[in-house]
Image (tube, rainbow, N blue to C red):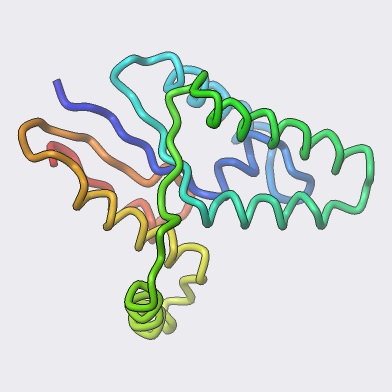
Length: 160
């Protein structure tokens, strides 16, 4: 059986956290249920790119209503603490960048600039591709970018 790996995108985490002006209730309920299901499935792993942590934190800090900002922040920190404690099947990925990595990201951003792909998405794609290189070839994987963005969905790989 192929292992299911989900690279979570910022838009999904914003839905789950219900960040004002960045979610709708129907999508939030759908993705929260998917998160529960995927977090309890022993054959699934959720990857949290560092760029998603940064982007999400920035969106939370921009919330005008202090009560909502505090609520979202506390939920966000709970998720991050669960990752550090190993109580959820999540892993961080994409922190060890070197100068040549930044050069590759610059090249990729030039190629994708015309498509209006943002730097956050470019970092997610870079992390996704680097993660693929780390996977042992002795088993199969279904690996996808868990996103609402069509341009990122197309990078998913099944029976990889």
